[in-house]
Length: 499
Image 1 (cartoon, rainbow, N blue to C red):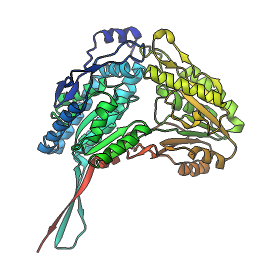
Image 2 (spheres, rainbow, N blue to C red; image 1 turned 135 degrees about the vertical axis):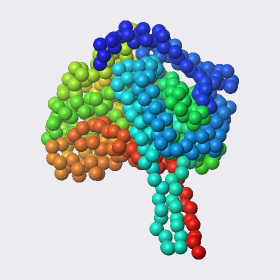
Image 3 (cartoon, rainbow, N blue to C red; image 1 turned 60 degrees about the horizontal axis):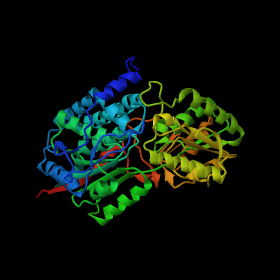
Image 4 (tube, one colour; image 1 turned 90 degrees about the vertical axis):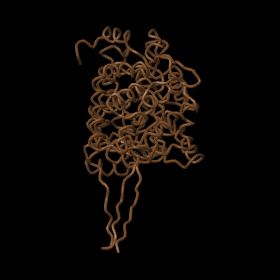
């Protein structure tokens, strides 16, 4: 951390920060055709935020038309791979160079600590664009085996216009997960960010054009899901929707694809990830992994370790250690405070929802060990302290529903078979973990766990080389890694016969 990054530093930066809330279409800012805007209160203090263009059908039409022209004319698709690579690497450099500005925009929108926005979200956004930029000149077509009188070329070709709809919990990171592979593959993109988190997306689009990305290749339309997201998913000239968000909305997206042009769909949805701790585990390591895995980003993480399955003989000891880690290492504070490890929840309505779920859980018999209460009301922001409920069963609502808040459900078990049954007893399958010193059990258990990512004796470790996505109602399709390119492409066979 730089010494200058005090709360006063960020307050001064805020006073001079330019907040651009217009759409970004065809290489320039545009107001909504209707002239309408909307605002929302800042999570950290409840004060009014920036005015944002309230997009609708006509704005989506304009963005899709711009993306289609860019794709069909080939202003990006037909560029030399090395030239495209240089542009994307320049884009990544600009993201890093504007890191403080982007971090401020992210924190104003979503309420996370500004140093987390800077050191995690901005960095991983730049890394994602760089990763896929570097892949562009390393993508090969294939020659299929044929007889001597024929040649069959199998080409990997971009789909066309991609609609991307991204969530508010990690806007820049997940934007990069969609934009990087889609644009590297040669597509054009229309991005509809969550209405709660539009500022960084607009700035990313402007930086892309500054880096040399042709107008129309990356467009941003802001607005509400029903007014802008739905028309994008229903649009007859969009070839694919890449969506990250709730399972409920993911199901709607699938319906919109079927109702329109049978467009491709990729969904990264909700989770209720189990972290399983056996009595032989390193309990200090497990406690740290549980606390950070569940409470980081105020619990607003789709793969948060919100279900702790702990062998009954060590439950009390582990909960004590989790509480100690939480209170000593995971400071909840105003996002501009250098000490802040977690900040505010996204909005007042969401805070009320989380508190309501906590109250309902207690009525069902969940026993509060510590925390899970509204705090810092004097700030005007939306803060809930990290908390744990113990002696739960897997049929309780706090153990089954995705809370998207800093709330951990601890469920005791006695045997390995029981732990596996409970772990897999969920509609979700995004992630999971197992903590044990018995490596035979670790691998046996991890292979039997129905989840897209499983960690052994750690949690939430990854990089861009590993795919991310889920099983069951956590969705399908993968973000990150070389495999993410595949879903934005299709295969074309060109057969040539001789003689």
